Each structure stands twice: as structure tokens, then as C-alpha cells.
Length: 405
Ligand code: ADP
Image (tube, rainbow, N blue to C red):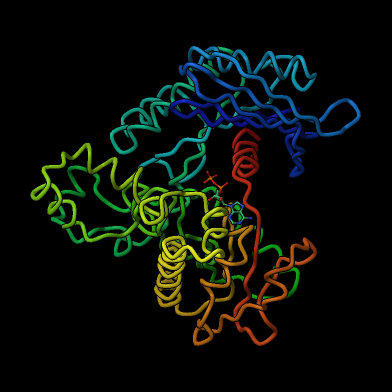
């Protein structure tokens, strides 16, 4: 039996294919992982990593013009067939779709029917770039495999456990009632996945797992306070713009800056939108959003790169203090995402001088690339500091499996 995970974006289609013995299993094996990108652009590209008949990992890539999402799905199915990963979409046990915004409606992964599609569509004003693209993927997959159950897994649903005091902004309350203005939070699949991994790991070691802070640092970045497995606060807000400093997003700023710029420079709201979402964050401060190269530049003494890193780390540290207070204590901090998993420099900076909160990182463990231990805290640290690779597609596959079984 096989489960396909689809992440349909505005110009890309990402997919992963998992095998399982039966619907009762918890054991999903990754068979193939791929990407069709630059859809409807002059030059598209296809990539696939897959297990061949000898169970060895092989890589395939090809440049190709991809006219639209329908062709992207066609290319994906043909490719999976030619590599003997999947005979036909009809053979799947289920398809899990990443859907960015589930609003207040979806508190968990949900079997897709006409009503669910209609609700996701109605939520599109909250995520105008993402939900329509997600719906395109759903519609095409339904056409290709009408009998296969399909499940929507939402980025927002893990955060639906926030208390009202954490999700209502101090704006006129009618804006919440009439226009759904509130904190939703995103990256829920990732925060949920690493929190479960951390809890399982800590329970094995008879440690407590009640109070966790998960720190997802990729191109997008967010942080989450988790009490007894439930999200109680998170840094992204009504949109993914709020909170931490990100690759190209500014995160928290004084909202009056936008009014000021509009007034003083005549920048339009569309230009301000681009400014805060695409030209700010690490890129705004030092010209690039690639943390690896920023760290290299900082090590060579580039002051702007160094400043970008310090702003980035300081914002995370401030949130850790805030969430320590929200949780009234802390058992473990979990770093994940490309930067969280790979950058010892950032982890060290974030955790520097946090011993008052019981957080102390061991330099050697933090710098070690060994996969033997997830733990990087020093022996005197009251709080465990863990590095756990995220796996959003596996989490979507597991939630899909839970719904269809
Ligand atoms: P996305 O949010 O697009 O999935 P990722 O989670 O892959 O992004 O994270 C991308 C970021 O991780 C980039 O800024 C990249 O430079 C950074 N990164 C990856 N490896 C390293 C590393 N070894 N050191 C520092 N940063 C890294």
C-alpha cells in the first residue's frame, strides 16, 4: 500500500511517496521524493530521488517546460511509473495534501469532500497565494484518482488550541468577529512533528516532556510554546509575516512604520507588501537570505552579515524568554529547520547567556556533527536542548493514514 503526499504551490508541485504494509501500521517507508518547479515559466525543472529495485537511492533531474499544474501532475505520475515506484494513482491507499490555511474551521486533518473544498476556498482571502494553489492540487488529484481518499492537512490546525488571550489582537474586537482578524500561526505540521519526536525521546529517558519550546528556523521561521502536547502560543500571526526574523520577511515591526512609509515616501500597499515579505529579514539587512553564506561572510569579518545574524538570534532569544514565562517553566528547547538543524553558530548565539532560564549549551556537543545524540545541552543545564530534523511530509502522511484508517 502507498500514500502520496502532495504540496501544490503557486509555481511548484512537491511530492513524496510512502509505502506501508497495512492501514494499521505506523511504519511508513519513503519510496520517492520529488519536485516539479517553475511551472508556467520559460524553463521548468523536474527532480526525483527514489529507491530503485535494489533499494538504493537514485537521483533523476531534467529541465523541461511545464505549462501548468495539470502537466506537472502528469509528469510526476509518468516519472513515478517509469521508475517503478507507482503503477497508477488509482493504486494509492490515500493522498495527503498540505493546505496552508484552515482558519478556525479545521482543528485537525480532514477527509476531503465537496464541503471541505468549499470551506478551504472560502478561507482563501486569509492565504491568497497558498490556498488556491493547494486547491488546484486537490482538484487535479481527484480527477486522476477519483476513488482514492484524500486528506487535507493544515499548517494552522496545530495552533487551534491557543487560548483567546493568545490569539486575539488588541484591535477593535469587531475585526475578529467580522473579518477573522486573529493569530492563526503556521508551520504547525513541523512544530507538531518535532514535539512528538522530542516527547517520545524524553519519555524513553524518563524525562518530563510537558513544557517544550520548538524553534523552526528555515527560510520561514517560527517558534512555538507547547504544553502537554498542545500549542499554547506561536510567533506567526494572522499571516506568516509576524514573529521571528526570516529569510526575506521582517517578522515583528512597529506597524506604524508602514503608515509612515506610505505617508512619507508614497509607497503603495502593494509595494509595502513586497517590502516586508520579500525584501526584508536577513536579505534586507545584509543582502542575502542564505544563512550559510551569511555565516561565512560574518566569519570573514563582514559587519553587515554579523549584524544580520545578531538581529536574527536576538529575536529568537527574546521569544524564548516570553515562552518560558507563558509556560511557567521549561523542560526542553528543540531546534529544527535548515538553520536550526545545521547551524551550531546560530544555536549557540540563541542560547548564549540564558543560564538564568536553566539553558546551557555544551560547545563540543553543539559543534559535533554526530547523529548519535540529539542532546546538545551541558550537564549543568536544567533544560534539555535538542536538535531534531523536521519531516513535514512524513507528518502529513501519518495524519493522512490516521484519517483514512
Ligand atoms: P525552507 O524553509 O525553504 O524549507 P530550509 O528549512 O531548507 O528552508 O532552510 C534553509 C536555510 O537553512 C537557508 O538559509 C540555508 O542557508 C540554511 N542552512 C542550511 N544548511 C546550513 C548550515 N550548514 N549552516 C547554516 N545555515 C544552513
